[in-house]
Image (tube, rainbow, N blue to C red; front, side, top):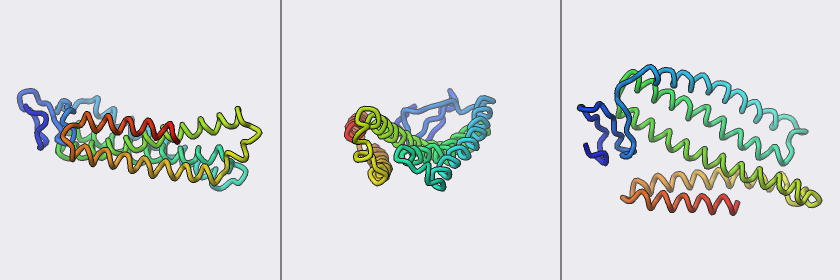
Length: 202
């Protein structure tokens, strides 16, 4: 069967599902207990992820003594994990449940596309936040005398905003060009290089 077909299809001879949005992706159409267990684990893991990261954000926002420069970027990082618990984990669970129940594979394909977009966005945001945190720790250790001049609340807030804007733009640009350009390898290489340069420059 042609995996690059523009339609979601099931190969009847092998019971293999191909997603038109991700032609290189395929998995067995037969639901199994593994999908059910994986979905339940994702749902159960989402609740502590939401509660714990929400607690971190509220604590830093409400307590002035915790509103230090290092905690501002940490709070923004907690937002990425909170969004993962709110969106990525439940959608992943839904995909597993639908696969287990053999519900509309077209719906599974669409959910997969949405989840892939969100994962790309949140992973990119996480990596950029970790880069900023590492830079802040470097300044605190190596340039401690100038720390208060270099690391300010305003600068870190601007960095956090820049991280989210750049990652939204990067992710949207990637998926837009992937749909428009036939050669996806070229798109992936360009976007990977762009992301790497952006991370170093930030």
